[in-house]
Length: 197
Image (cartoon, rainbow, N blue to C red; front, top):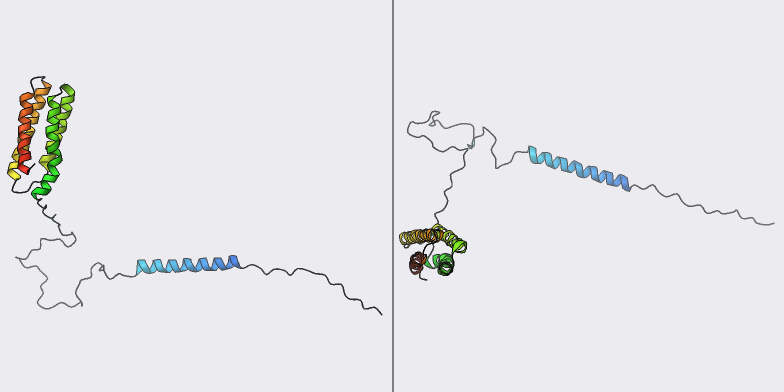
């Protein structure tokens, strides 16, 4: 008697169906629903910092008996609550003499060098240097001096600018520029002395 054993065949087990796609779909829908609810709450709930139109700042609907609905003749309001209050810029801070000297020292140092270049050149070269000095004079005029120097500074810069214009005219007419150069040099030296250079 032979014992026959049944033939055993190996068969792979069928894999379980993958649910990853379904899980991600559920997570995505949940996140979208939360985002929609959050947006609705953000836009639909009233905020405490902005009053609704027509709402007054009074705690209750009743008004006190002493209030009148018509304005009194002498108390007219000049401010419109819908307009922002006018903001005036702060007054410019007056510079100290040392700070002012630092601001203008570059221009006042370049001026004598420029005048030396003009004295040794002619034509368009001299004109370009004069134009540069005129621009520096304009910058000096625009710079706010201390109040103790204000009138003297304005007069001095005006005189210097006038001497530069005379110098430019002398160069353009190809005349003798030595007198105009010396007049401009004297005017710029007055400005240098004024600020302590």
